[in-house]
Length: 288
Image (cartoon, rainbow, N blue to C red; front, side, top):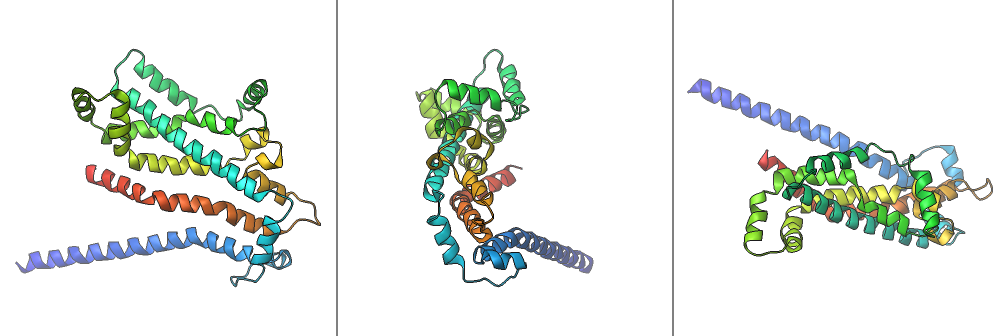
């Protein structure tokens, strides 16, 4: 009896030690992740001359001046913010919805060349964007869509990586028996997908929506090829223009404010969808 109590006590101490170590590691990782945001905010409050002297952890008093220089400068920041929000939001919605629909078709239906279609979609992931850039620009010119946001939104529908994630999630979280039951009850395919499949896929959709939103928000390559006028440009292009200003107009404090300004919507989107991510992790751990 004493040996059992000793073993249980030792086991409890081992669990306590491992839990303490886990908390310490998580605290260190959290500090390393948040440290860069703190540096960004501190640098946004400093002037260009202060930044050239080196880093200091104490905030300065130039935040209002830097923000005024960015918001009332030569670059249309509000237009860039709206353009980035429109492109990123619509891309996230269209990408996740149609990728989930495609994954549902591969998962729930049986048809000829089903395996080939799945393999073909995955093969597209190996094609870099830079390889198809020239043909894409030529196609945009022929369609008279140059300097438009449409070429940045519509291609987001075809996202092989998002499709693959949705397909793998459906394999573990969407039993075909539920789909068959809905069909027996007389529900149409679109009603089944929108009212049954989509609610069950919320964690996966939230994760991919965040990834797609951030990827589209930070995208510089494609918008730089298509957008010409300042009022059509997205924030990454405006930040690049601000950094490439001549020596007399260049202000590193304004660059930091612009970067902080561009990160804020991403943080808000993550906070809004984080609860679904936690649900997805919990669901996976229970099923595991």
